[in-house]
Amino acid sequence: MGDVRGRFTDDLAQHPAPPLGDLIERSMAQGRRLRRRRRLAQFGAGGSAMVMLVAIGLAVGPFGVGADDAGQPGGMNVGSLGGVVDSATPSPPGVPDDAPGGFVDGPGGNPAGAPHPPVSPTSLTRVIDTVRIGAGPDGELLTTTPQAALELLTRLLPEGKTGGYANLRSSGAGDGMPYIQLHLDRGEGPGMLRLSIYQDRLGDNPAPGTVELTEIPDNCVQNKMVTVYHRDGLQIDLMISTCLSWEGKGTSPAPPALSLEEAIAIAANPTWGTRLPADLVRSGAKRFASLARSNG
Image 1 (cartoon, one colour):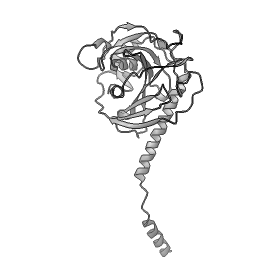
Image 2: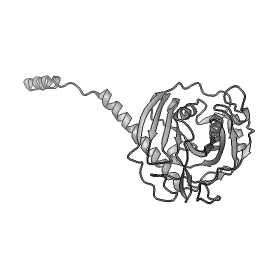
Image 3: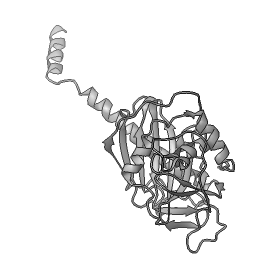
């Protein structure tokens, strides 16, 4: 028995232990990819819901400056907003003016209410940058609402006219977290943006400041998605669409509203979180009082 055990031990010694660290890392990365694909599919699954839009538009100030701060120095102002009221984003050619804005997904933009295909096999996600995530906001913080998220997003956008505001319900945005939409017109026609707040508590996310880009060439709604990882499992997904979606009316081509650099700067802003400054929450509640949750 001793000889058998000795030969067995010698035989094992000739085969080094597998690199468990590499296996664990690959498994964690695979898990993140699967969750990302599931979130993208869940964003699309919310498309059949009826989406209520706010039929107003507001002029916003320069990048990093709120509409009421246009031309003034300094960064984001979390006070109440003024701004110039403008008309809602017009419908594309061939679409009735009273057609409500809706969520459209799928290759080329799948009309709301139609079957939603799985995430395109042509989607590609890669790390494109690493940025510094600054300290979060101080003072009184309140639970993030869709209205507050829209308030913050409009203050961080480049100069242009905004409209087409929507609160999109989707489990892909995380339990109780906002998933919002707006249109931004910088002089070449309106483009569509969608932003979601997601918190993953599994603890295997990339380091804070990691920036990922997901590209889905055959999906005009989710054409490009910038994901910036923050602390405590928080991640901000900002989608840059190449079309406008109209519930039950298909899609209409539209210019990208942001460059990748602009999208990264917005998604990396340390103010984002599951709780936002109280002034933002209160201002958003007043400014977007007509914003209703979708029925999905």
